[in-house]
Length: 116
Image 1 (tube, rainbow, N blue to C red):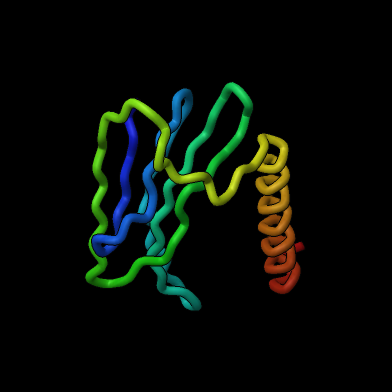
Image 2: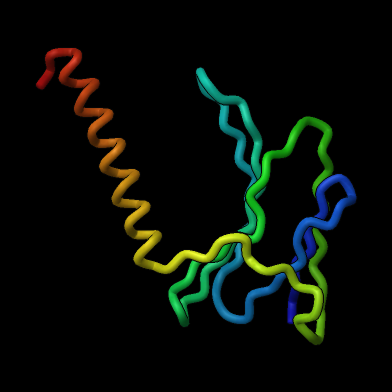
């Protein structure tokens, strides 16, 4: 089985695998008027049971060092458990909630400008 081992500043953070589905690793930098942050995320999706997983969601900072090692392993011993598991319905509800929040924010902005 192929496993992914993530270390931040030489500290073991996650060692995980997914037998069937998708695993994603991402770095995100958000800079706007109120935030300036960098986060690292390791997640996945299993289409057999329609579950979304999060193993890692953490802020990182300047001069942090991230190591990703891809290994072959025979057993699941020592693998990290997800910190969050969501069903397809929960994810869909989150998407709808986010879209509604965005809609009402844009609507309020247009009303404030007298455009609607």
